[in-house]
Image 1 (cartoon, rainbow, N blue to C red):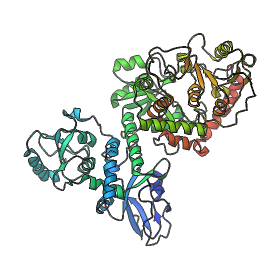
Image 2: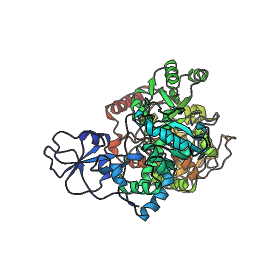
Image 3: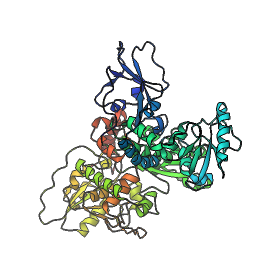
Image 4: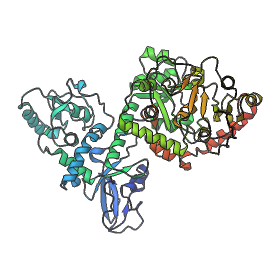
Length: 632
């Protein structure tokens, strides 16, 4: 299906103010094939200037004005960022009204009927950041309530009273509730109104019918298929939706390319879910200074970014004040955090890097483009179930998600994607006729994934090499030190003489993906390399207890009895790489799907890291020379 409204509109050039192009750099993608630039010093009277609805026209502008509005498809707000994937554009003060003026045809109505379930699933539209507790919070079951929307506007009090009389005249219980489109300071004008602001989608889910004066909430309910009664109500919701879809322009803000309405609604749905999850996080703790900007963007909500605290007491006080959780970087969590948080009744969320992280090292001060946020414990802690483990044990993977996972896995393999995606070329391993080729990836030995996930007798890299050689005395063993250890940032170096005695080859500073293509098997403690090897169809033996062990895909030397579900590879990919992590585009700093991040990994300019990263590389080389256990 082609993106909506691809053709340019009329003569003249199209311009947009510098400020608008900075906030919405994807704006040109709404007009494919037509340039959208800042206005020139001497515009022509035929030119168009794109402005948001309500924005002032610059003094002296001689041309036409094209007004822009997201209408009922307003995006979720992340802090100060509201970046629309759907726009309506018209040379009138109300582009949405202009869109509704054109009657839709039969094909448009059929498409609108197919889009309505996507709209309801996306829960797009409405004031950003409102709680969405569902019908039970209103004391009713889905689809049974007769709702009366209080306009909270004294100028409409008389019309609201007439609306209320008509609603109650139909018989039965009527629940009056404030219109969520009205600002928080507005007060109800009807007696008995429930003065509570909730998402319009809670009202839509609860309603058998809604009595409302014209406005955004009434229109959204009509689009969603709920009967709306009152002055100016439109009975033909499918026709309304068809007219809007036909006039809409859609563009992906991350890819800066045109997209379909179906894709735009999927993006709005993903954003809504992430903003809702972010809303529960009040304060960050243990976040290194160089991570804070990226973490603020990744965890922002309509309420703004989380606060950052230096110690347990300050973090708990701020979390209690805001009514949310403390998000702590797992490896830097203070020892007293969990007991004090439990005593204070403050939730704790554990944050770590995601499984497709960046094109460069986190230890080199390159911020992550994916993170994991776990409400139970860090995903790598096998002492009890994490959110990820619960998802792996219980989450359903319907056919569409399975197909997406298979396509994502194919893209990962085709692009050679791993966690860090370091540059360079891997050496070709020598021919080894009759010998099984085994890769042993080194790990950072003081990393919590090793400290918590290792199992006796294998506690570190040297132990692992000895165990693999003892189990496979005739195999060809390639040992690959961890890149953070090679760079001098972390501990885990194996003395060169012992590595050479146990491994047939030691691969210094080699990228991982090409090595996995040259071996039949991987042995690891808890390294993510084992997961990356599974994606490539390699046999994997786990000497520790990583998140991907115990599900029937690995040979487990340290079994985890509570993991009894058997997963296939696409189910594992769907849960571990699509459902669980959060991805953030490093350029726009907007949430994005993993597929978009894979595309961004092919753009070196997105991963430069700046002066701080260059200084960190120099520091790593010095540490490798001066400190034991670091470097090659």
